[in-house]
Image (cartoon, rainbow, N blue to C red; front, side, top):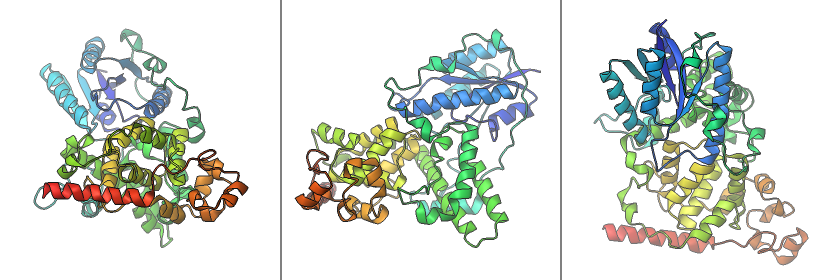
Length: 484
């Protein structure tokens, strides 16, 4: 059987893998290959993502070996390595699944041209999205910049295809004849400082872990998703975002699994709960469609007015206090400490800490995006870009700039009783519910009773919330006047 090279990147699964399926249907024998070669110097792999990728590649290699195949692993120039593999294996076919980030698309177009000219059968497939960017447009042919009409259009037509079942077995190939392959450990993906030691307690990377997570979510949390998804102390979310980013499970699989499950349930709220979660899958889709259309937004605001926004200068100390969870604002500090400990942060808290950074501290959103990129296990360029620009007020479907999340009110609403804060900020654990989200408002005797001295066991707030909100709105007024 003639060989074919299967170039894997963020499609680290055997089921619903269109490139793999194309090779099988062409009657070729797949040689699965991962090449660590980052095409975007502005956004190299973050340290937390490196930990996940390391585990995910090991899991995929084990799955392939169980099927009779294997995973070849390389580091270096993708074009040169693929050319070498095609020559050594005698393959006539090369297939891969698209990554939709700007730098990846540019490289893919180049590789498609190079290897097609050399006479290889080259194919590129969509494995990461429900629909290709450009398939969902407004009537005038322009992209949606507001989520709700995008969601309605996507919901109406659904995914472009059915999920593809995994093969139970794959043909073996002669790995010894293909030189240069490395063990996964030789890629050096694990962070140099072992701050990730707690990650394995919270996560199981790999295709099996992704499916176990989806099934657990559907059984235990989906029914209450709409009511609990904003409660950071509750186990209310799916926790599938990193699995999705690395392609251990696809949005097509999730969509069909949930819809099939809903059709089999008789409870009145099942379909409503399912659609509430699918809206979140659609937000991911929306982010990727936007990035495809506006690739400059990874570093520049979509709303050009924000190019002249008067951000704070000399903010390094404040930025570090935010990064370390030492701002004196309990729910902000809880979120930043959760991120450092687990590689994740509850989505509601992500919005709170982002609003605090960009509006109360007046620190550019790009600084927050870079910190999240390095410390989030699910760091995804499209999602990260859209999320930060949304909160900053500079992106598509953005929150109006005057909407400044008040972290005290947000904490009292979504962390009523302070369970989330007490877990991640244990120095406040003995403080009563009334002051858990605003310890600076408690009288000295109450603080002493809780074993707290502000500025010692727990910091004073780095900014006054009311005054900093006023300053943020004044800065926005300044931008509007200059652009007027």
